[in-house]
Image (cartoon, rainbow, N blue to C red):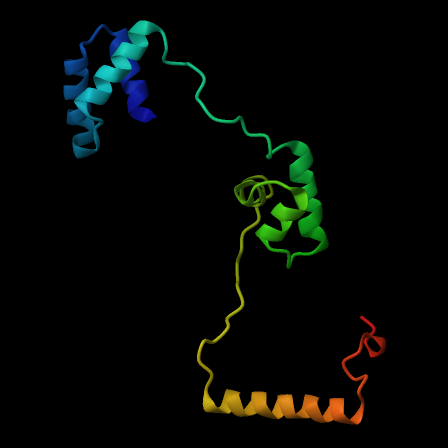
Amino acid sequence: MEQRVDIKFCFKLDKTATETHQMLVKVYGVKAVSKQCVFKWFKRFRDGKEDEPRSGRPPTSTTPDNIERVRRMFADDRRLSLRMIAEELKISLDSVSNTLHEHLQKRKICARFVPHKLSDEQKQHRMETAGDFSDACDRNPQFLGNNHYRG
């Protein structure tokens, strides 16, 4: 974008495409656009096509209404994943991510750590816990039923 502006500036000063490319190389070095690119932009400027609308769909998901809907969903349950919000609101994952990060200034600051390999102590603890649950289920078949849990 920056070099396109430089190219347009040189075009308006009646510089040639070759002169413009030489100046870009002097300023940007190896990061300068190619000579072919400079000629392409000069042709567009000459033809009056530099500000033609670009192809592709206009952004429709990042509307004030959708931003508010994402904000409400996130406020109601911070454990929702981006994918869950996107599916619920029927908008793209990128739109949800953009809305949270750019419009609502939310950042992910931590994530749960799940070890891939358990230590012997962790394995023993899991076995004991599983045994406790098994015993409780044997003593009371309704132990895991929804009737006993009140959230």
